[in-house]
Length: 190
Ligand code: HEC
Image (cartoon, rainbow, N blue to C red; front, side, top):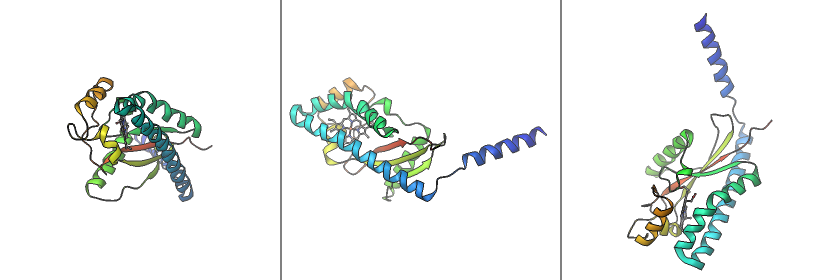
């Protein structure tokens, strides 16, 4: 009897989790996710460029240190979602991946290593929220802070980085490499 109950409960739980998104919902979340990620990227990137011009890498680093998370938070509130940037090798530990993000990161990393296309994904997460993921690819202009030490990244830059982030793991990237992902959680629709 007890066994039967367990079977029934797990069957119920399982079907509960199986609630899936329709194709049009997937499409809608994908489009909104792309839009939010683009807008957040543009905001981060345009101020970063300004700071680089005004005060070089030290000022740009200080900007990233103090403004990256609040800006992401501001955009989350604007769109009533939860926006996160995460990576297998993070700079800021507050951006560390959770279990599901780790799975997605490993999925993209494996595809990247096989030179396969990295597309944005939409799926229901463990809590049942629609969740958008998209790869973040490293560009040339990112190398001054994420490239290799003594090549694109000077010792001086590295010492400033390490003063903010003693556990920094986000050096040694190359152009066009997978740097991380956007992870955007949407609220459940009632
Ligand atoms: C001026 C130096 C600088 C430049 C240039 C820069 N970054 Fe960063 N990056 C940082 C800092 C500092 C952080 C930590 C910010 C935080 O607290 O979230 C960071 C964090 C990140 C993160 C979040 C995950 C993590 O490691 O904590 C991603 C993703 C990222 N950068 C990608 C990029 C990309 C892509 C570019 C180029 C378009 C770029 N960065 C250019 C300094 C820089």
